[in-house]
Length: 147
Image (cartoon, helix red, strand yellow):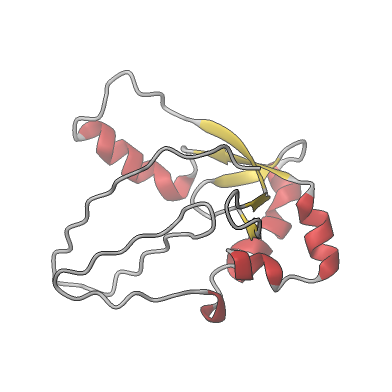
């Protein structure tokens, strides 16, 4: 997401630098997987929806580099704007950040292990293993608040 931010025009970067994104766990793209997890034995006291506000552009605490910090799966609108008002700009950002030249494709092989830093990377899985079972384990480390 460093490159996604850095390849934007200076005017777009200035616009985005001050914006805050509102993210929801209930967005249509992720609702089904949440519902499946709840049915599969997740905590019954889990909320139906989690809302979080994060800067649209965050500065990585270790590298000091700015990274685009919105995603199609959770970001619903900009703070103090409606979803309708936010949609054109978010749509542009969602398309921009998955451009081939801004992404990395990991070549999975037996025994592969992948790590990424969610502070500056997005996991965008591609179902290119039809007919095969892929087993994944997720470990989340404690982190910082986005700034």
